[in-house]
Length: 333
Image (tube, rainbow, N blue to C red):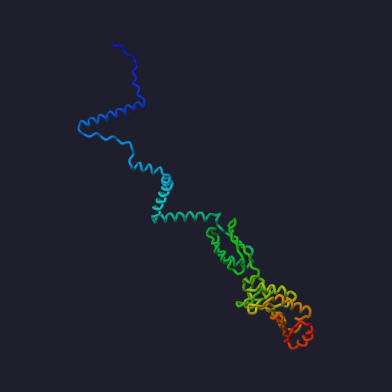
């Protein structure tokens, strides 16, 4: 029997990776050289060696990539253009557009109809009861309604068109309340004009139409064409006429240029076009001194301030001759 060799056999160690690559590379070179020799023996032309230089196209692309503007275009603008082109291509389909619009409308309705955006009540402040009802009528809002659906601009135009409204403010306040703040016009005179009796404020703006003068007995009466454009002057005349104001029945606008003060007992003070307040003050002073307006005087004509004229009844001529010596330069008719 042969003795048993108890020595352990181990596989040969593998060469390192770089060494193995070098060996493989050398083998490739050897194979290439052999192929060239074999090709030469067979009469074939040897293969041209590979040119390590880049091609013209690659060279130009490399140079172009080195340009900052080109890199910016390719990195920033080109992706955006690509996305825009894809979106435009998708929206070119009619069904896609309709589906998109329906989705947007559904989202919009869902957001607008949320409870925090709903308006449920209306509050009108600064207006009388009658005007407040008119405001509610012209506003014409069906509650509840989304605040996004309120046409505040159109509502404001309709409310401002009311005669009695000087100014209006609209806002939606917390709690779903439509707040309407009204600045109401204050009537100062009653105007008897072509359309009947109307209330006017101090600017001559129409406030309301009335049926009877007795509805506003505390307001002075003005009449005549153009009286509505001279309300401020009429108010100044009435302030000066304080001592005889209980007897004043109204002011008559004559020719759209001057005023007549109409008193009770059929008396009239005819004021001039220029400085009517000063002329009326003279008449009041004369009345306080000589009780002029308590006599039988029908007209005090001051249209010519340098030559005032009194129109008397026949019975009053004798009484006026007695005061002729007052050297007032008054002529009698």
